[in-house]
Length: 85
Figure (cartoon, rainbow, N blue to C red):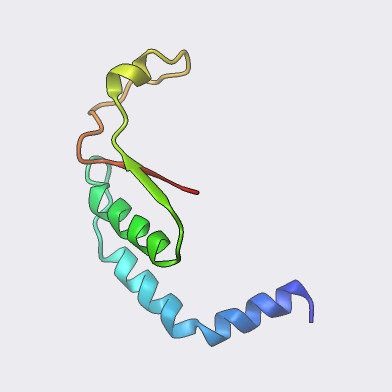
């Protein structure tokens, strides 16, 4: 069985779990400035999978020091960023 067939088989076996996850995901508002709840949801799912997740709010003042910084219309308070290891 090739990789594509294995993926198709996994999707078929996990169809209801995938649909439930997507239904939960799209119920959470995620417009710019209000990303906190969706990020918390995704971080929680990654943790449930056994992954280590670092959650932090970037410092706007520190970001402004970077030469590639592009000004944003609002800060990052309540809009955490996460990394999985």
